[in-house]
Length: 452
Ligand SMILES: *[C@@H]1O[C@H](CO)[C@@H](O)[C@H](O)[C@H]1NC(C)=O
Ligand SMILES: *[C@@H]1O[C@H](CO)[C@@H](O)[C@H](O)[C@H]1NC(C)=O
Ligand SMILES: *[C@@H]1O[C@H](CO)[C@@H](O)[C@H](O)[C@H]1NC(C)=O
Image (cartoon, rainbow, N blue to C red; front, side):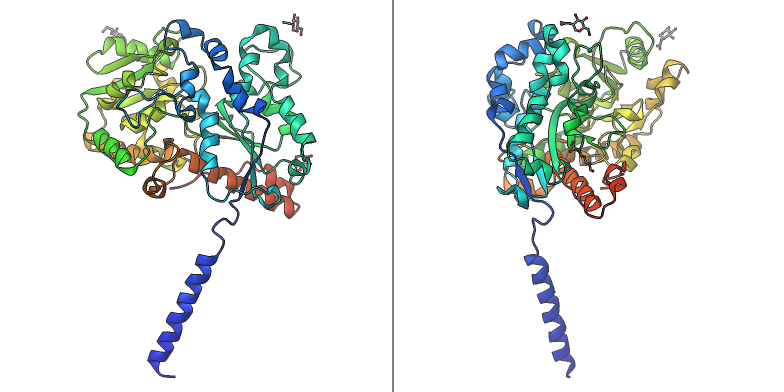
């Protein structure tokens, strides 16, 4: 055979191979069925917003209360200003309706649950917990949070749930798993908590929560929403460029509660050090919910700071970590539970040293280490490098607006995309383990974080 003919044959075969790959099912392993739930499990929970949200935020008389306004834009909240395109007054508790809205935009949705690789439950779980969490007269029934959904799933087309014992079901929890993990039979009941993630009927579901506990294989953390929700690539790029060239005159910044804690802890040490070093440290008073609907309050100072201090609050994680990444303000962590052990699908755990600083909290609280001195000793070139890496991570942790341009969607995965991809990976792995009769594969505390 002449060489040229051979070559042609090889080329043809290669082309045929490519065509086969192209026609390979792009939805394989990615089909999602969105369960059709009665409105009492989702949209009706939004109808009572004015009644529910002032209750939900005890500080509401002091600050802009989350009201029905927060529901605007599918839960992103109202725009910060009439002319703003990408900034919203976002209330994290409304991540549930927003996530639902974004799921509806996905490719590979299937109406027939028997064809689905995963089943999404559009249950507004944290919103449904509000009465239990805030009304003392309902305290003793807080173990019932979610029970009515469990009953519905057991009765309505029960084969959807039974098919994989619930291992293919997932839902979003716009709050911390800690707040919903009281054992169902525990007495006395703790005010402010429910038992949702401990309900026996949900034992095999995957929960995507703003903060997870470290050991349960059912939970995974997804980023706290920030207020930046661009809908097009130029808007995203314009912001990142602004953060990149921003002039940073402050060494470090802390945005959070400003009351000195009664017992010594890392937040107290930070406040004490900042009170001493007003030249190097800026404190943004975010007490009593002052910041949650007013991003300008902290984003502007963050653009002017090199480092953002992220101590644990009531719980280990904080929204401010994601605001900082977005602002190119290098986050400083004081314990691993603050992020490294949480957001593996979004922030590669092996790369934290590239975009953040770690100062063990005990060395500060007990060992007399000064945060300001530690940070001032980091060479400028290194700070710039970390800032650059943080800004590279920013598109992965932000929540793109619904209805974004195709150009932005194709530019990379955002927080929702990565959360759903992670849930699908985990569910596929469990389905395989079930099929192969290897239950230990289901419960294995897998390391499924990404290394982007
Ligand atoms: C809740 O139950 C405890 C006993 O476990 C009881 O002492 C308390 O009065 C109950 N509270 C309400 C509001 O019913
Ligand atoms: C959870 O999955 C296991 C199998 O992995 C099954 O035996 C169990 O019944 C399931 N639990 C529920 C509540 O469906
Ligand atoms: C604040 O300054 C005083 C006096 O210079 C010093 O004794 C104290 O240790 C400082 N506190 C902190 C937290 O830096």
